Length: 236
Ligand code: F6R
Image 1 (cartoon, rainbow, N blue to C red):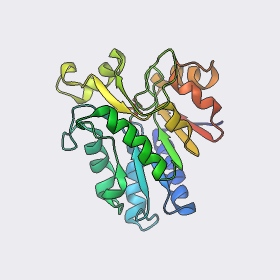
Image 2: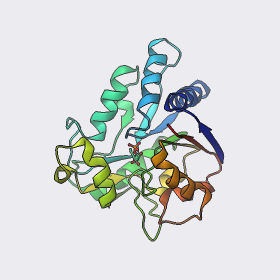
Image 3: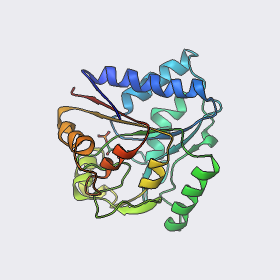
């Protein structure tokens, strides 16, 4: 594991943007695994700047996102599809048809999960997976459990996750109770993983996940076994 501590969120975002753009320079048709949430926002803004400056070309890049709320369609302003379109895809020269987010409104959620894993296989696997980490150690929406769930699946969100995400909704009751998430198998099979965390509040879970025992009660801890893992933590 490559564990990097930086002083500021600005520095974290600069490093993430440069790793992602470096990945694209190495393999222009790469498959990026992308995350939503507050942590990658700074990096996404920097990537947009680099793309506008002609420093990185997304025309052949494919992307697969980690997760989506069940029941929210892509135009809902709290859906992860909407988040990705508005914080990244609309502002760069990626072909929107090459961007994939699980369909939270699919009629058959189980079939959608299976199709998502098949899609990742068809794309040739993920070259670089970007992750945030939840206060309970979740990655994607893989919540603490008694086992690691391998495949893309439907998950019931923990109350702490609903609480954390309620800041984006009119009320706690409006937060969807279930989501589709890429499984631990999909994340672990990415060729390279980059996990980012910022703020003093994340320090405890970062230490638990990367310097404590590997256990499904801290889902991110499995990443200690990944052969190409970088963790970047900024205190501020
Ligand atoms: C988002 C995701 C989540 C977040 C995590 C941290 O697609 O999969 O696991 O990465 O909840 O969220 P933030 O960055 O808002 O602290």
